[in-house]
Amino acid sequence: MSDAEQIAQIKTQTLALIADITAQPKPDYSIDGQNISWAAYLARLQETVDWCDRQLAAAAPTEVRTQAFT
Image (cartoon, rainbow, N blue to C red):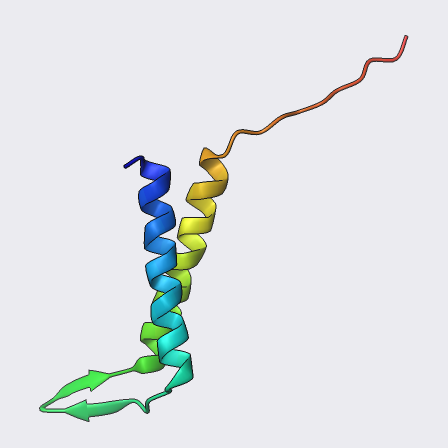
């Protein structure tokens, strides 16, 4: 599996987690002194998707067209 395929898979898995979290939102809570913040978790997942998009865009071939006038 290439790096780009792995990044695309990470993005797909992360988007599935985001869909699950937003379909069944949960409140933030504390248990045994540990704070659980679903909003922060969602933000981290969104940052992961953004990172994947940047990596995939950087790896994509690009074409630059120029035209000379005389």
